[in-house]
Image (cartoon, rainbow, N blue to C red; front, side, top):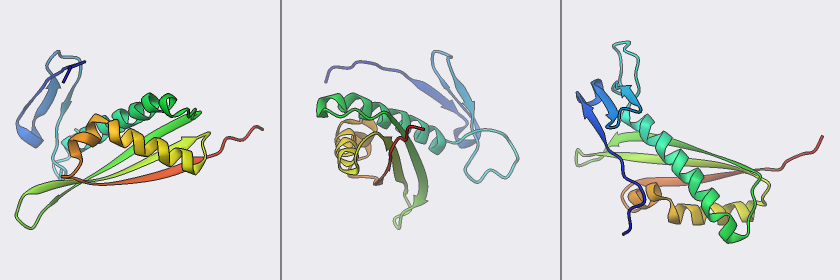
Length: 143
C-alpha cells in the first residue's frame, strides 16, 4: 500500500490523562465516559466520532464525481457507543447519519454505499464493529 499521509499521537494516563498529536498541533485532556469528577475534557469515543465523521464526509466528496453525482451539501454525524461483550471484552457500536442535499434518495444511497466502501475508517471497522448507516435527503428550496 502506498502511504499518502502518516501521523502519530501519544496518550498518557489513559482515559483520565491527556492525548496529543506528536507535532504539538492539538491535544486534549481526557475524561472517562463515566466522568463524575467534574473535570472538563473529552473521551476517546468522542475523538473517534469526530475523525470518522470527517473521513466519511470526505469519502463522499471524493466518490461523488466518479459516480456523476453533484450533491449541493452534505454532513455526516457519527454516534459512537461503547459496551461490554459477553466475553468481557469491550466493543464499539456505530450509527452514521448522513444528510445529503440536492440528490434523490436513490442517488444518496448509491453515494453513501460507495463512500462506505472507500472510507478508511469504514474499512478499519468493517466486520468487527456494528455499523448502521442512515440517510436523510434534503431538497433545496429557492425562496
